[in-house]
Length: 452
Image (cartoon, rainbow, N blue to C red; front, side, top):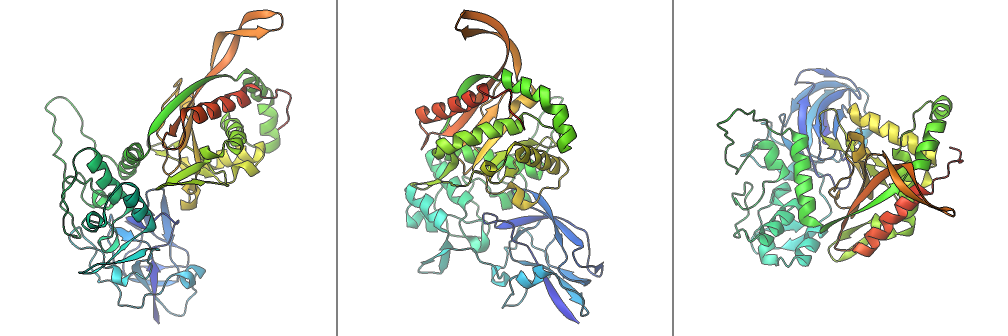
């Protein structure tokens, strides 16, 4: 017999922790290879963690709703020479004693000495102890004028009290609003009320540091679910990070509407799938991103990272009312059929809660179709760390003036508003408006005689 560690799996470069949603097994239960043991959630997507061995679940180290670092041992499985998954061979091996049995509580910080995984970091020597700062945190601190002495006294919500990206951005946001928090000694449970609670603290102690909600009239008070809290935090952080500017343009998409109406039955018969307007929009956007590459970039400190890969995120509404953004990887390498298949597959997976963590990672530009719900236009919020997001409005028939060689005339055309919010730190109005007009021109010049 032997004991096998079940560890919190790595789910992307930017994901450092996950929340345990539900245990499907309890100590003493039999588990088979690749059988689902628990459900977890990150700030991107919910997913399942399968067993890496066959045997008996010996013990678990964390309770439901606990936030666990990537790579931490979350359970042990007792085996009897049974089969092992390849995942177990890839899992990091702890060289120190395993975490204590009691589940983590808000009063008990994660004992990261037992966690074999450590993110890439820079070692900063301190008189009292050693504290680690990631290069991203150091870049943000340098660009925002946060001194090392201030940085050392920012309470960290990460492993071993480390300062996370959210911690430093909250600190900067507080300074900008004139609420500069007083420096405080490091503590696993920071008490600084001027700081916005981290995602970890929010998951463990909802409404911490905020007044209790009360209303004397006829009303229903609904607590945000976990995903809505993550979305809210992501949106507020985006507004605090990027200087948002939104431009608008109107496009005559009559040719595109006529073409889709003409081929949609044949397309469904040949490809076994329906074609919507979304892949047509994405096709036009990809062509323009190749010409205006700064729209396909991100900002880190004083550096602009221009992405060579074009990965299009498409905002998708879930049945719960929440929003998720699956990503079409290498969209510039797909033809229209390939784009359509990716759009439909990812949308269906999102609505059925079947997205994998990697399906929501790596986006370089985002598209949201506000017209699906009847809106003529919108002012979307940038999906960080991207620098632009484009919104397509509802397609409406309207009388418009048509210029011809024979003179002007009024005709009924299919018109649509397109809007784009972009980061004014690096995208000026000229570039943003030029790109948006180029997208509109691509749609207006749609070849009504093209094949699919």
